[in-house]
Amino acid sequence: MDIIFYIVNTVLTILYVVIPLFLIVAYVTYSERKIIGFMQSRMGPTRVGPAGLLQPIADVLKLVSKEIIIPTNANKAIFLTAPMLMLVPSLLVWSVIPLSEYFIISNINAGLLFILALTSLSVYGVILAGWASNSKYAFLGSMRSAAQIIAYEIAMGFALVGVLMLSGSLNLQVIIQEQSGSIFTWYWVPLFPLFLIYFIAGVAETNRAPFDVSEGESEIVAGFHVEYSGMAFAMFFLAEYMNLILISILSSILFFGGWLSPFQGTFLDSYLSFIPGFVWLSAKTIIFVFIFLWLRATLPRYRYDQIMRLGWKVFLPITFFWLTVIGILIYLEYLPL
Image 1 (spheres, rainbow, N blue to C red):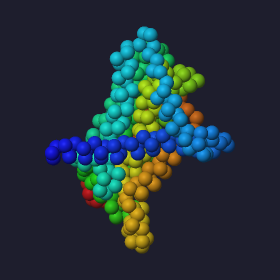
Image 2 (image 1 turned 60 degrees about the vertical axis):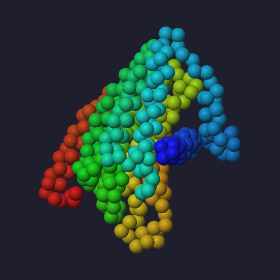
Image 3 (image 1 turned 30 degrees about the vertical axis):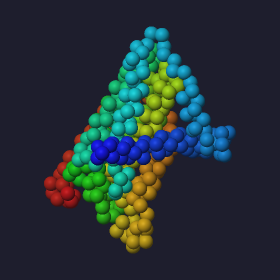
Image 4 (image 1 turned 180 degrees about the vertical axis):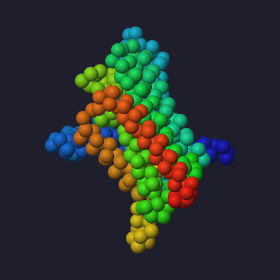
């Protein structure tokens, strides 16, 4: 009986995270179209529902009802496995994200390592999707994307080493608690260069503008998912936006105190103590999501060689240098552990 209760409780907890996550992804796409429309003096979605609010639902129904067309010479098994290889890691990662002081699906001690391992898996989905499609455009897009992800994954990993050095833990709840005190005890202060590198590398990891060379419409149509349609395409779409939200929420947790109040240590803290931590975490995450959308509306696409140069010749040396600085400051006891 206890086992049944445990299984039911676990399934309900997972659904409690996954269902809102799908809704959030749907309305991030709506927000993106509205915000970019506003920035470009357009209206954005207006037709389906009041102010176009039902547009994401219409898009989902359209994708679900479309046929999955498999190219004649494609490797069918790998072609259908690739979207799952993209989506499943994007979902699993959320099991170790602390959404508040009290709510986390699995509070494991190696949470940060778990996230790094799973986010690295998406590169296999990208390569397999490009290769199995048996299309030159898809294969070129997947090669570009894989090279880009690998280049920025290293810089991202080293940026997180700075957080590990200061917190002394891979547990995300502990990392947040170690930042407790005030807005100036959050890790963005000593690790500001690493935060910038982490966030920009996150934009590159998710293949978002201005790093979206893998789907450069003017050069190689839609990149590695050019041959996909229907639900298979929807899985790539879901994975991209889930990763966008993940990078935003991780930036909030690792560098901006997660669910901690920004008014901690001030006279306002006692007046605002009724606001739950989840609200503060959501507000910080929304700001980072908005920056993602802002970048897409503002910046032109980088050339492929510029992206590679930035990852290998700029970000990597800066992370090494700043980690050395942090190490020296910790050794000299200028930074508390």
